[in-house]
Length: 117
Length: 107
Image (cartoon, rainbow over all chains, first blue to last red; front, side, top):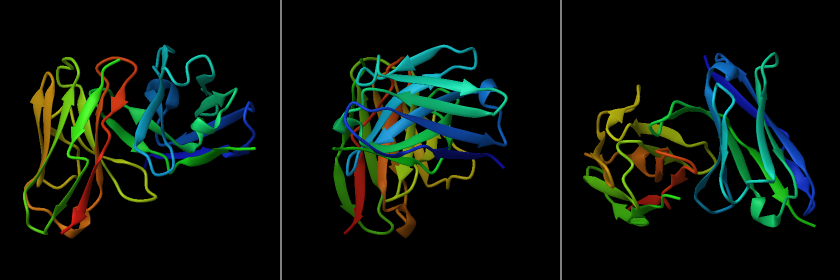
């Protein structure tokens, strides 16, 4: 059974940093494309970032230069390092396995990030 | 960046109704489109990928069609558990993007 479990969310001040984790079981993070998606309170879904199995990464324009997606192969964990956070980054952040063609088939339960002074 | 325009933003329907939701891409995306269902407080659930392929375990009352710029999600006979918000997603290139969502409510 595949499980993705996010952690690392919390309350942070504007300009601060957080690192989100997505611990995987039942699949190998380094063998898959993995994505982050977020959802601001009361809003729709927003694609954030993807890392290919080969290591190529892409970002939404809204986070480019501030967020970094990475993985730790031996820990089978996906990360999202978030720097210079703003209130607009307040959201629930989800990780998902990404099979392309619109196919994100496994999702975590989400971790909540609140950016506020 | 490719924009996804989803309509309607909300609709009211009754159990047993046929429901259609559309997504239009600002440029051609082949069939690199998925449809998701989300209920409050829950992660999105994949329904359809590659525009028309039903994800394993999803009821056959859900179907998808389209290619290029225009796509449709159809629920052939709405069931009580289908009241939720639906999103389309393209990943033809990056940045990927979701439609604005369609909230399906009980009439």
